[in-house]
Every structure is written in structure tokens, then in C-alpha cells.
Image (tube, rainbow, N blue to C red):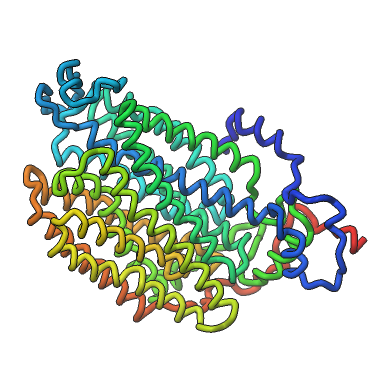
Length: 527
């Protein structure tokens, strides 16, 4: 078993005795006749509960997660910047640009002068190597989170990924192969991140709040939106190497807070109030089992379920589009729209800001509709999936004809990724609807399949645009995006469901079979 690093243990010990609810002890007194949900809301109205702390750290965790992922997408544009006195080096080793070249490019204030002779194939090779590792741990991450807990899986993933990010500039200077290996390891570690959150939600988040919790994962888009312009500023004022140092250090800081404040279930949290724990456990009820021994995965029922495959296929289509835009937008901005590095970072961030805004808005609406029984869970998931995945496909067709115009292209990209944020109210949390006990495994399967799209996207774009950066070649990319988006959405609309599946709960296993580490304490009003 891997032990928490020394800095994490020190931080953990310093916060171990902090109350999870920051309120006075006399506020704990209330009538025992008050319903658990109303009592919990009353007590935590103006203070930070354990559930709110989890929301907060997941939000910033996925921001940091995507900072570690997308920092290279913009930075690579500067790493292979075309300077007139840069010598060719087919092996991919770094070359030094002289002071005259830097001065002619108005970058004499930069600390780093090293750049690389990587052609389009090699650049996409570096970007795509992340997904080779990412594919390998998606399913493992989901299942491991169900067995040992999401706290360890997500936490160590971010901790070690942050260290790896700090080593990126050194690896690039050593050889092209070195940075490829490092990005592979980064993908291997971060592959567990998204599947890990579904088991966490299954234990901590009541069903009527799950869309909003899943929307916290879309802080990844906000992380990308912040990272791209900040990276552009750092590159312009310091150098490209500083990008990796800044994002890596932010990841380390977040990791310390995560291990100090987050636990896998309310039952093992040492600082949770009795009211909050009771509210969570009663809201979740019998759908999620917290047992000493991990439940056996019903592989046959899962892999033969059309509802599971609907999730897998629409997720693959959505992520293919997202990866293509995320990884290739800075390159498109530079080569087709002739945008400089600072404008590139700002304009490339707009779609991510829109996506996060849409994610929060639609998830709030979805939770409201579910709580008030305005629509069935199935109808909610299909409605927002259509909005999030089908309409971006339509917009990619528009991009085929208008994408050479800078204003039109930025507008279309922004609208497409903005609409895609509605996946949080659509299929993204659907595994929690149909099988919360195995939601990590389901999402692991979906993300494993979709990760092939990341590698495929990099390969296709690299092949189409190698020594041929023309709008005609990018039109082919947009047609492929349109078809992928629309087919994926139609599959989910036809075969998706929000109904709990019978294979979620193995025969004989109930909530009473679970082993709770910390007994439920009574509040002062109950003693």
C-alpha cells in the first residue's frame, strides 16, 4: 500500500481536529421532530458542511486536473515556434536560438531560449501519448475506487501527476522520446480521475443533488479556460517552461488539502455532524452498499445491457469532439486564423468558460426537475444529452462553411463546447441512475472506449494536416466531428434509460450488511 507523503501527513494532522461544520456548538440544538433534510439545511445554511467541502475540493481538483492535461496543448505552439535562425534537427532534439533571433521576435525578456524541431507528426505524437496511458487505467480507476475508495485513487493520481508535470521541461530537453514517456505516465495516472468520482458520489451525494455534483467535474473546462490565457501570459512574459512549474505546484497544494479534508464515506468521516450523516444515508437509502467486502461486478449483465452501451457510445462521441477541440484549437487558431500566442490563449479559453457555465446551469435545472417530478429521470437524461451532443454536431457542419472567418470560427467553437456542458445533466451521471454500486466501473468502461478517441483524434488531425495546414484539410476534420456527435446522440436517445437496473443489488446484500467504522452519534437534542 502506498503511504501518504510526509507533507500530506503533516497537513492532515494539522486539520484532523478541525470541525467540518464551521458553526458554534449551540447551533446543534434543535427539535428531534425536524425532518433530517430540513434539519441539515437549517444547520448548514451559512456554514461549510462536509458535503460542501467535498463539492469545493472536487471543483478545484478537476480544475487542477485539466491544468495538468492541457498545459501542453498551448505550450507546444511556442515550444516549436518558427524562428528564422533555428536549425533543423530531424531527431527531435532541442536547438538553441540566439539572442538576435529572440530580439527580432520581441521575446528578449524570456528566460528560456530552447525550442524544438518537431513536425506535425511529432507534435501530435507528443500530445497523443497522453491517451495511450490514459486508456490503460480508466477501467482500473473505476473499479479500484469501488474497492479501496476514491479518496486514495483520485488523491494519489493528482499528487504523482503534479510531480511529473514539474519534470516536463527537463524531459523535453533530453529527447523527444523522454517527453513522450513522461506524457504517457501522466495519462496513466490521470486516467483514474473521472471514474473515481462516481463511487464518491454514490456514497456522499443524494440522488436529487447528483447532477450538480457531476457538474463540479466540469470545472475541468474552467481549468482549461483559465490555463490557456494564463499559459499565454506566462509564455509571453517568462517562458514556456514556467507553465509546467506553476501548474505542477498548484496540483501539489490541492493534494495536501484533499488528503486532509476528504473521506470515502460519511460513515468514516471523523468530523461529520450526526444530522448531515443521517440526511445523506437516508437519502441514498438501499441503492448504494458500503460493505467491508467489495461487491462482485455482474459483468455479463453489464456488458449485455443496451443501456450501458448507450452511455459508452455517446460518451465516446462526445469526448472525441471535446478532445479534438481541446488539443487542436490552439493549432487551428495559429495556422488558419493567424492568431498570436496571447490572443490564442484567450480565444481558445472561451469555449471552456461557456461549457462550465452551461454545465452548472443545466445540472441545476435537471436536479430541480427531478426533485419536483416534472419529468422522469429517463426524459431528463435524453433531453439534455440531445442538447449537449446532437446540436454541437449541427454546429460543426456550419463550421465547415464559415470556419475560415475568425469571428465566425470562434463563435461556433464557443457555442459547440458551451452546449456540450449539458452532458452533466445528460448521460454523464447516468451510471449513478442505473447502477450506483458499479457506477465507477461503468464510467471506467465508457472512458476507456472514449480515450481511444483522444489518440485517434491526434492521429487523424496529424495525418490530415502534416505539411498541409489548409482550411480544406480542416473542413474534413469538421465533417468527421459532425457525424460523430450526431450518431452518438441518437444512440443514447434510442437506447438510454434512467431506471435503476436489477443487477445493481446482488441478492441478499442490503444496507444492513455494511460495516460502518464510526457509529452514528446523537446530537445534544437527542441525548
